[in-house]
Image (cartoon, rainbow, N blue to C red; front, side, top):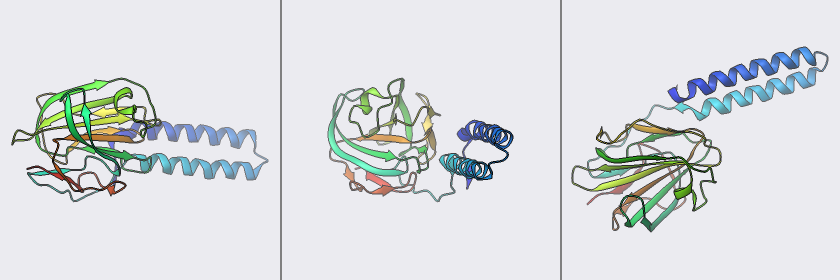
Length: 219
């Protein structure tokens, strides 16, 4: 396992904060051993928590020309037909994956193809399970066209904890299935919009792995 590049600055700032905090406690409360040890333990816990946010575990990825692979780790919270109003402006099959703070936060391309559309939206930080988060939160929208002509839309959505969405793609790029397309710091949600009638291989509340779990099959 390695640490993702998005974590370097955050981890460095966390270490600096811990060092300053512990130095202050050692100086100010030298005679209170119980307090100093409590701060040491909490500092270690904080460091471990931040470190695991940015872990990048080694994986054997799933690939398939007609497969749609889960773009993120997490739990399936939505499988339903809905109106997609930004790009398609018609009925689509939405699958949403909720990323908790303990999940790996790397986002991976569910299919290979050409990026036909990309847009970043600044916004609010509502809880990821709030229905309005899909249209009001900070988010990105990406549409990739499969070589068979099928367009798939996927959307990174920030949540109550997430305060920064990172992306590595732009319109016109040729993307490869399971390669990284972005990162959501401290988790949140990823939505995927498929053609109505697409065979989905997931169930509600199923735990999935980004780049590994098969989400759907294209006809």
